[in-house]
Length: 326
Image (tube, rainbow, N blue to C red; front, top):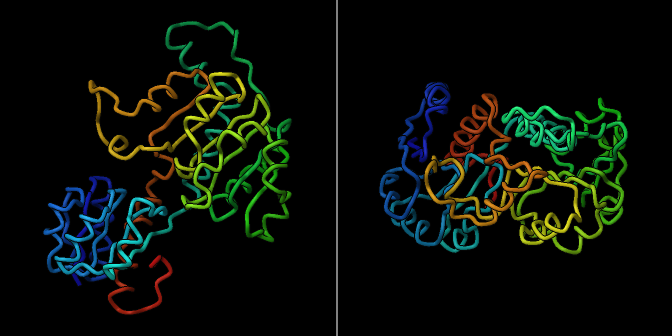
């Protein structure tokens, strides 16, 4: 079987080589992004593997014309793919899973950095300002942390947090029995009102689009911190900026933002920043912004490559495919 792999990064090479040999297949590799123009590179492949490229109707049409039947994205989220149009064309789509430790550990790091005012500490130290003014942080055992979304990553975050002695609240449409040993499930309003730190671990769907908006931000404590390592669309950026500007929220730590496509994973030094909201968020002393790197560990990259290949192979063989979305 031939699989065309788009957006091949240098850090994926060793894993692509290893799994190509392990599964006895041919990977047609390119460092180019999947576009309507580059879709012809997939001619002869029934399946393609991509990263976070926007797969719009014109791209899907081009893939369909070149005989592609299956798209595997080497990510958990698949909101960058026009699922409805893919259905119309009969193109199937799959995502992957990878080590939950990567995002969970990063989330804990952001929680600690936000509650200990690490951005201000580092910025002050960089200009040799070693005073303590404005540097006082808070200790996790004195705080309540709310976890919204208790899937694999959310559950791993909860497990990590148990070692810090904080009170843990959880909210999810589907309660998990294992979580109940460490956290208390509650409704969203209660979690928002009582949490000092709120961290988001849900996929991007129509139902939870802008779930953290003006109304829900108003329910939060004025010194609460919100952490997002899930998807940018979970937070209404305009509402968040307004809350930050008027001191209605204590701060934020964001690994994902709205409209990050075309910015993240590119070297944009010495270029104007086209995302006005990102520029504003970066200017706040109480906001940490990182470029969607929570997932980025050696184990996660290995898992992403292997599971994308396994997903394509399962589709080709007509076998059960745990990653197939449509």
